[in-house]
Length: 301
Image 1: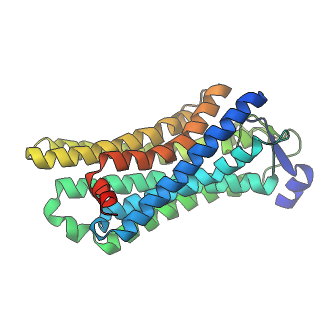
Image 2: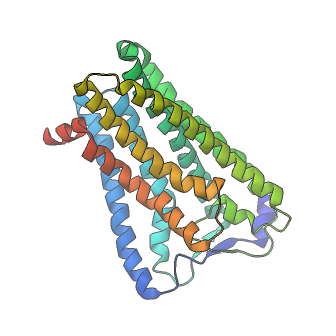
Image 3: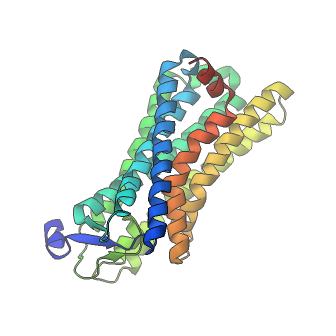
């Protein structure tokens, strides 16, 4: 069926972010700079955690995996967006579109779960400090990260398996700069109402469950912080604040894209840019500026 689909629609056309060549030239420079900073920032955190023995702890192991996930997530769509600013005809092959959707939801879904794992790590560290080293051992850390990747893979492949079997036989213009499931489904040559509900529910359920678990975990952690000594509470609160900031930046756009779609083109594009380009850039900045251990590790270089 996939080959049959491609024989009818071999490529999709992106309408992009804007029509103005002057604005596209500005965005080319801006997004190229942001992407370069994102790559360097996240690679730097990964290498720093590996190289500095003081950062060989569960929290920084999870942080390094978050940076790696952000690095991959931003690379799914941003390079294509940047190169398309140089082209008049912005196209992507059928297989390229499917790959964008798969890896976008793979890394995005995996990152949602990884943020929950990081919240659990903080919960154990704050609420059960005496048992932290026995609970968050090396085996547990590897299991947590592996679970996040497995859930991300299942989340992504379950949707792609359905979409690749659908008939694409007519419209092929996407009013966006990348392929995403809600947009591509609208080009299917059949009634897609049920499919749209199912696919949005897939992403929506994952996002909602993760968000609820995060709220519960950080609520317990913050309540415990309020009863700690001033010094310990200050350090724990600083760490939790950084984590909560990342969570809100990541889940905010996601909720509007999948749970409460506004169907306003410019808003959808803005949220997509923020979700796919800005958030992976802000994560290393937030953790670097707010984390004393990271700053000390940088000074030791």
